Length: 396
Image (cartoon, rainbow, N blue to C red; front, side, top):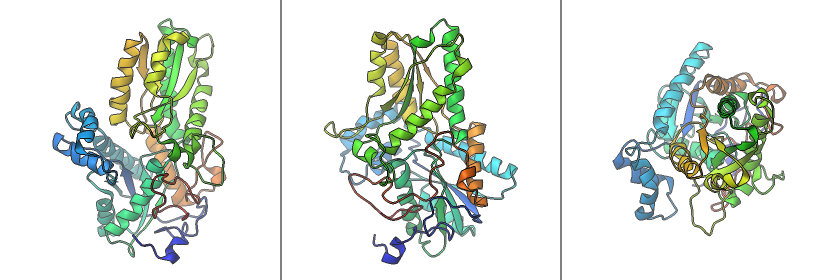
């Protein structure tokens, strides 16, 4: 795809307020629709391999290798839970938006399976909406969880032929928004209380904050290039900051006091064994816990918005089995899903942009936030493919 040089000097397909690339858009924008953007998933056995071909397009992976992953989906009848979860989230967002009297319709489109994002944009435009605000179901900085969604917006607009018809901005990454964090806080506190009530000492409980592993090359490029983030990039830094906040708030949940050990772990690794990915793996850590004197493990799916396949299979199935083999009591805490605090927080993010709320007044629970409305130069480059045109960010 060729992007005219004049467009490359601004923010692609942005509203007038965001087009010049401010870090935070602090003036009101009259959005007339919200587009929920997500990953997508198969909804039957016949969908599984075509879906996985979409996920891995351009990588030349044969169907025989895709079938190795397909059995996760086939175990659940070929149905990923993510589409039904997005239907529920869309309905919850619609209800909260209506309750606040904002008058915004909510459309929904996916990256890898129907309904596709370009279909959502086309329907919004057909319904007369021109100034769109995209809400992606991903909270953290990385290529696949941030920049790829911004590339998807460009692709969707151009595939739908809407280059001259719509603008599309994207809400900021919400990893440290209180509405996203609150369900994890509640889950950790409830799990620790349960285990302590069973007679397990706080020092014998390991809290593992789990997120999707990504290639270390992508992790190192997961933040703006003008900042130093460490070996895991902004991706790891954001997760660590949120996990630290959650554990600092544990407080009275631990009867009689005592520190509860915790760490950040990774899951769902894919790709060739020769390619470095973020570690340690959740199963490796769980298997080693008894030697460290642990009797119980609390797994917190910190990197996930809802209980999709990586949670149901990699945590509820594989990690649970690893804990059982190790003789450990296992609790997996809930994802945000349609938790009222999470839904309200997402609509708060919409209102930030509707009203142009100054950055200094935006809620966040770590020193890293509030994150940018318009991604900074170089943010979340794909280490393998480089840069493609992306919305809601300044061109590299």
